[in-house]
Length: 152
Image (cartoon, rainbow, N blue to C red; front, side):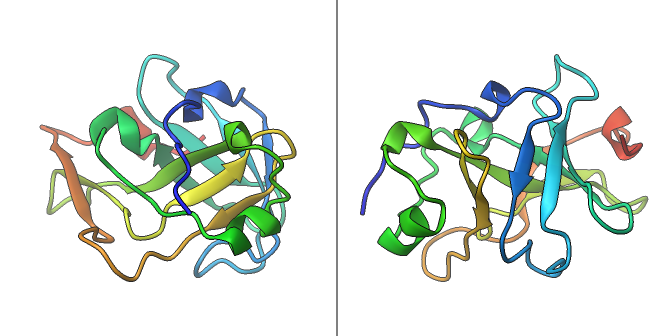
């Protein structure tokens, strides 16, 4: 199923918007509820911060900001799981890997994008097993770690 996802952007979600992941994120199955945090409104990044359990936060971004040709095929099961009634309800973001001290390379996980129903807050991490995308797709090289490195 081909659904246009670039009409609504991650920035359309206000700070504090709650996302509900019925199955959690990969590797974090017990964290089911997250909120969007904005640290720097002018930067193309946000935080996805768990609200249940020990503190966990992920830097996220809108993949279309950096990769306008990024394509994800949405399955009917995904639409059903998120209780989507119209394609305009959907948006997509990816998780950013912040550079370690030995690297100054920002990467994004294009194989595990997060699909969101922006109306009801239901979210699901997809797993793209076929295609040209990687879990550590280079985004940009930075001279030093950005202020993103400090959690919200």
